[in-house]
Image 1 (cartoon, rainbow over the protein chains, first blue to last red):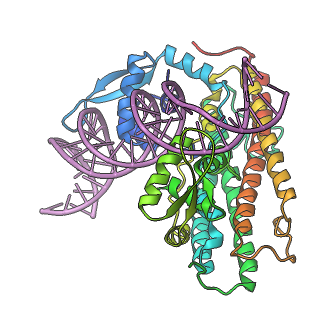
Image 2: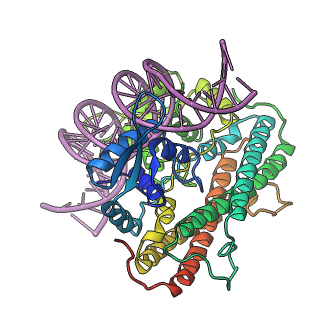
Image 3: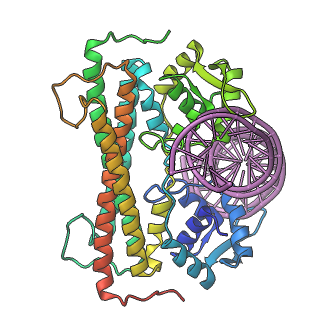
Length: 201
Length: 201
DNA sequence: AAGCACATGTAAACAGTTACATGATTAA
DNA sequence: TTAATCATGTAACTGTTTACATGTGCTT
């Protein structure tokens, strides 16, 4: 009954109570880049979660014309989150704006395509560095694919989830950057024989 | 004005004319896993593309109560696709069902979590093998990050886009599988100190 | 005085999924 | 005869984005 957005919110509240504003802020560019939502969606989802008994709120004083509400996960919410976590995700339909463009890149002007790919690569490079910095700021036991001996956070520690998500983000960005570099090289090589003009029409 | 789905369809039609049914079939599990759509969405999008002058159809005889229509991209459609291709994609909001679960995995039962992660890894392994098989079936010039000397397809060849998308898929699956293996190991290590029971409530 | 961060909501539009509806041909 | 594949469409619903709406307190 709970939606994926609902579980995203519960995952945040399981760490600490938050206002709708704080949840929205975390869901703009989340740690590990795995879910996003607008504040309008968050506020309506809170209402559904509360009527389902997964969260509860207390009113605290704050600015503006309305009450500020701080939400906390309930025991029921925690249980439902914990049992959903181990169910099978449906095979990701992974819609990629970038891949969609690359699929049709053979129609485009080579120079313009290369410029776009370089911009995208630089952006991913920045994101990757951000993830690495975040990993570095945390405790760095457990980090590194073969770090072996040092004991990491216990399974019951939320940092386990944080680090796992960050590691996924690092791996994803690294693989994307590697692919973009390969693609730029391939595009250069493919372009050597062709004239550098737009070949539409 | 054209939606991302519209460009996905144009990208397919730029290769060869197709019926709505064929486009839908390709969009269920696309080459490189980068876009999906239901047939209901495809048929309505065709209407929009046609009223915008990007596609045209001819009626061919076929089964069923309605006419079978074969769609082809127009010169205008090709031009609009080619110029969209080199515009910047917006930073992918990349919603991941799996990452969402892993972010809250510290709440779950370790055994159940490991079982789920193993199922997911095996599934990704299958997808990866599928991509590799597809790459192997095509001409395999250009394939391999540092294959260097052999000339690949010209930039104006649609196979350039096919291979690029497949390479992205291979990189993504490899990185996902590597991360899942790391995660299973970390989960084992983290679980050694904790009792293997559900720690909710 | 202008702009930003905090803080919460509603409304309209668009994107996407699931279900409904029809019917021919071919293979098990 | 049962099911799958080919083939096209509409309707209802859910999810998501964008725009509207309000108002405080702090900083520049």
